[in-house]
Length: 341
Ligand code: DAH
Image 1 (cartoon, rainbow, N blue to C red):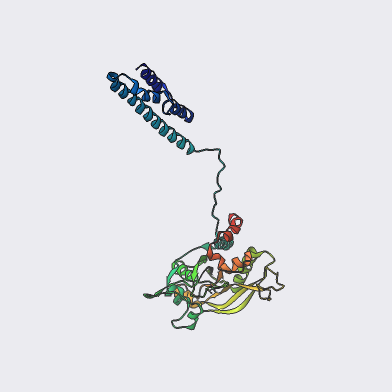
Image 2: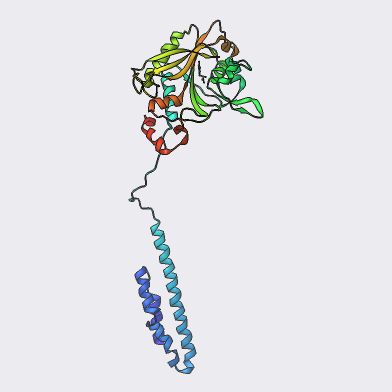
C-alpha cells in the first residue's frame, strides 16, 4: 500500500512539458518493467483479505497513468502543429506575378495620348450598335454594295441590331450630341465575320478620329496624320496618301507609312514596296454631317480610322495577329516594360 501511495505521488508530481518528458513518463509508469506494472503482478501475492482493495487501487493508478499519458501526448501534438503554422516573417517570400498591360491596350493608349496632346478628347461608345450608327448615318444607303465591304454580325432576332464593324459609329454618336468645333478620338473593339488567319481576326480594335470646324481642309488632315506617324514610329517616318473609297468621306484616302522594318528598302512585311498601310481617312461627306444635324454649308471636317492590331504588329514586329487574342503569358510578359512607361 505504501508503494502505491509513493507511485501515486510521483505520478501526480510528474511534469510533462515536452516529448522527452513524455517518453520518460512512459518508461517510468507504463512499460512492463515499470514499478507500477510490477505492482500489478504482485496482486496475486497479497493476502486474500486485502487483495481486492489492493487490486482496485493498483488498477485505478494504472488507468490514471494511461490517461495522463494520452492527454499529454495530445496536448503536445497540438502545440507543435500550432507552432509549425506560426508565421515566420524571416522566410523568403514567394514571387508575386503581377499582370501587365496588354499590348493592344498599350497601343490604344499611346495613340490616344498623341492625339490628346494636340487637343483631341477621347470618347467611347457601345460595341453592340444599331444599323443607323454603323451604316445609314454614315451614308451607306440600304442595299448599297458598300455594306458588303464589311462582313457584319447581326443579332438574329433583331436585324437592326449588330456588332459594330468599325468605330466610325462613334463619329455619328459624337456629332448627334455636340455641335462643332468637334475634335475627338474614339478607341474601341470592332467585329467582323471573317475567317481567323495570321493577318485577320473576327475581333480587332480601331481608333477613330474626327475633326469638324469651319474651314478644315485636306491639308490640315495630312499634316495632323504626318505628325501622328512621326510621334508613333519615329521622326524619320514618311507618309503617303493613296486615293480610295469610303461612303462616309469624300475625297477618301488610305495612308501608308514608310516601312519601319526595312526603312523603305523593301522586305516581306511591306511586300517589297517600302510602304505599309495603317489607316483610312478623308473629308467627312456632307451627307454624313447633315444626317447628324450639322450644317454642311458652314462646317467641314476630316475623319480617319486606324487599325490597332496592324500598328501593334508593325511597332513590335510580330507577324501573327492571333497572338494578341490567345493570352499566352509568355507572349504578354514581353510587353511589361512597354506598359510601365
Ligand atoms: N471605318 C473604316 C474601316 O473600318 C476606316 C475609316 C476610313 C475610318 C476612312 C474613317 C475614314 O473615319 O475617314 O475600314
